[in-house]
Length: 153
Image 1: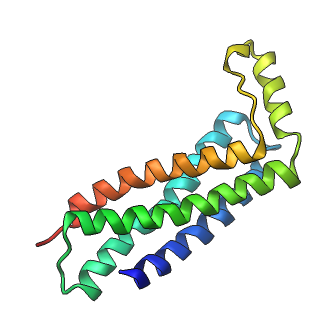
Image 2 (image 1 turned 60 degrees about the horizontal axis):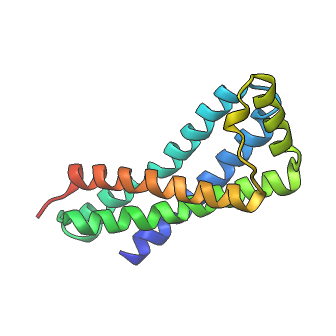
């Protein structure tokens, strides 16, 4: 199980970091915030797709075609932690070093749209932590669904 988690978790971490970073660097100034939000979630789901493939690989290639529901969930959650760290690091690097004005620009956009009640004061560290928690929760859900589809006793 460890090799599978490390292999697919590493793929997910690298994919999450690269796609999320590219999306932030290329998209933030060129696309509206709604489109950027959709692209952000798309990058999260693409990175978390490794959960399904890891569970299937473990079941078919390593465990003789068998995997329990909870073993599959464990593999998925561990991989989602890798992906979460990759995306969290990308978010931190972007908001801390590449575009340190991101939060003030976003706050001004909300004010311009009359959405002042949605303003939350964020720091780069808080944003990274938020992304890690969000990606882990989405990964847990994907792990549950993958385990349901792929379990075999």
